[in-house]
Length: 90
Image 1 (tube, rainbow, N blue to C red):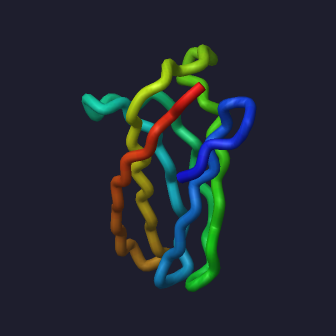
Image 2: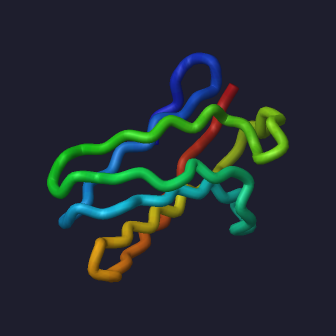
C-alpha cells in the first residue's frame, strides 16, 4: 500500500490464478470501514486498487494504521485471503 497526495491509497497485489478479488479496508480493531468491491484479476500480473481514504459514510478517515483484506475467488470455487497493514498520514 502506498499513500498519494490527497489522501488516496494505492494497493498492489498479484494472484496465482485468474480470480475475482474483493477488497475491504478495516480499522485496526478489524471492523470494515470501506469496501472496494469485486473485480477480476489476471494470474501473475500486478493489479492495483485505489482507496479514496474515506469510510462507508463518505467521511475521510483519521491518520493511523489500517488493514486491507483481499479475498480472491476462482471460477471453480477456490478462495484465498490475505490481510496487510498500512499507514494513513496527513
